[in-house]
Image (cartoon, rainbow, N blue to C red; front, side, top):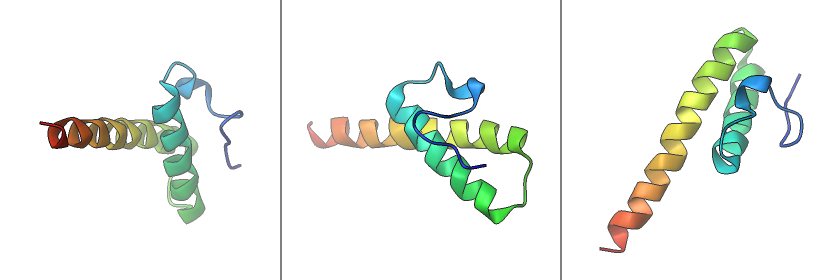
Length: 65
């Protein structure tokens, strides 16, 4: 079942909005492949979303120097 910005796994409820939205996007993409169970998908998507959002924030800060 694909998740949305308003309907997402409970594990994502305390994430910052940008990270949660990215995690939902990543989780849906992984689920489409059908190679992993939901629990694994959630954990991986949260980790990748944190890296993606933190990485883009760091790049913006570095470019302002």
